[in-house]
Image (cartoon, helix red, strand yellow):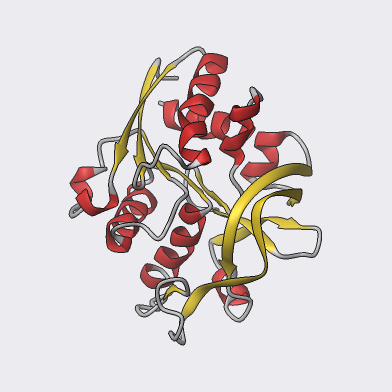
Length: 232
């Protein structure tokens, strides 16, 4: 295991966003538990114009608070992590954009987009949730055999949200029919996390596990992410 890792935080930093306050704390807690150092850099989406901007990091975390200043920048970073086999974590907006990137560049749906920025698109793979998840928490069922279930050591967790958009039910079956698979659902069966089977660590959640750090609690998924970043 590497003693020091570097993390690129892909997103547009805003210190008023609770998740942005929580992420450095969650990384610090996880690094301390692992006995390593985790350095991080905020990478604004509008500064990502080529893959070289993010390719040197040990891990990439696409963070909450979208729409981003540049959707294309965020998607480019996610593609770099997916194709370059860089450890990747996406939370909230990062989850949404990981789904869009996969739809465009793996499934070939070049017009796949986000309903928040293009409500009239016929390929809005991310659409409004039937019930917005704004500053609430809920039970999440972690599917057996997934990395996320292994990270938590459990088949259930309670997590926090600040989100109004999720996977469009019309496209759900097609999106998770290949190497991208469902990793967590809520109590009603709605999709809450995905991961890639053919990747060292590529996990995206609609919830914000990092917010546990604001309560002084560990974030198991962040620890699993850093473990993957530190793998030799």
